Amino acid sequence: MKRFDDLTEREVLALAISSEEEDERVYADFAEGLRQDYPATAAMFEGMREEESGHRRRLIELYRQRFGEHIPLIRRQDVRGFVQRRALWLIRPLRIEAARKAASTMEVETRRFYEKASARTQDASIRQLLDDLANEERSHETRAEELDKEKLPASVKAQEEQAQRRLFVLQIVQPGLAGLMDGSVSTLAPVFAAALATQKSWDAFLVGLAASVGAGISMGFAEALSDDGSLTGRGHPWVRGVVCGAMTALGGIGHTLPFLIRDFRAALWAAGAVVLAELGAITWIRQRYMDTPWVTAALQVGLGGVLVFITGVLIGSS
Image (cartoon, rainbow, N blue to C red; front, side, top):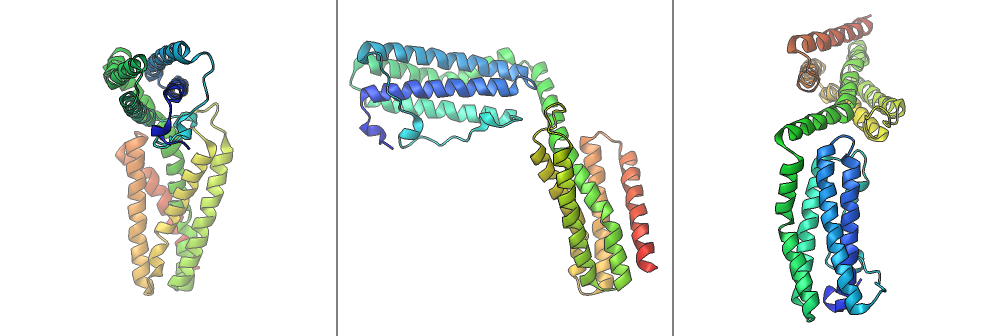
């Protein structure tokens, strides 16, 4: 990597051209990644891409006048001091807030680059162009706000926020809730059956731990292999699988941990309290994200939990 201060004016212009080209492609990828779910925001990024394209054309025109046709390949990663960017634009589904934050960072970095490059340039024409671009990048945030108002009126923003919420529910909440319900409810029977059959906290803990981890692995693979998300819009299958598997294991381990208490009766009462807290959390999530009425959610979750709990008690006591 070269130090920025060691770059010649020719290399500074070449770096500016490649940087503008990269930013243009990033904005195009943002627009493409958001087009299906957030068309208005995609249009905003398309407008920013067009601005970067105009900057690149002006830089190339000046470069030709000063240094000819050949432009050496100098990129950000070849020069010290630039921020290493995460390839957010390649991630699908693309999160709208992540794209906006990344764009803001890009604008600040580009402006600082032009300001520093202009300060060390002796050629008047190059310095004037770099100053102009620095000022334009400084006002780019204002331009982005104008595009935001133009492309994203309040009604459109509200629609996109609703779409974002639906995607979050579809891709994260639903698999997580399915895992939490399975882990919290299905492991009740083996845990409490083992506890009542052996009257030993440690044995109940081992059974609960095995059931929780096993259920987490099983549910994780089942969710990941259920569909690839290409038609349903449910997101990357392995992300859903990890979320579902982790929440399944968490749901089971929650009421398993109290059996680390040596006193069996105290452990049993503590586990029962945790079960109530887990069922309450599931009820809240269903009401909050699935728009299920409180009473309906509580009855559905409570009925399933009670039936499984009774099953475990009957088997463990037999």
